[in-house]
Image 1 (tube, helix red, strand yellow):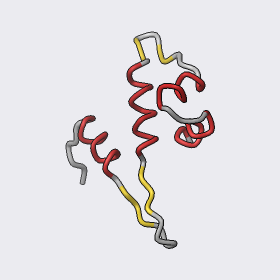
Image 2 (cartoon, one colour; image 1 turned 30 degrees about the vertical axis):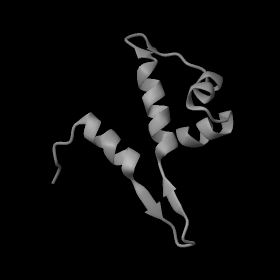
Image 3 (spheres, helix red, strand yellow; image 1 turned 180 degrees about the vertical axis):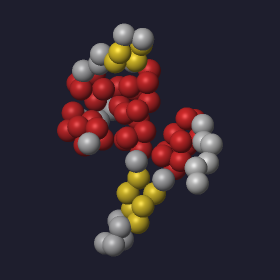
Length: 71
């Protein structure tokens, strides 16, 4: 069964998702959301041409964080 979910609703689910790991740490996907948001902003009909360093600057994080969010 699939439910009709809009793109905006999917992003809201991703933004609000929190996972409790066995060691009592809580993880969320805020950086992944930020990355998707920046990619969407910088995508045109010709594609997305933004460098990792630019993404890191716009997301206010390190290049390594951008790479982890990409994975």
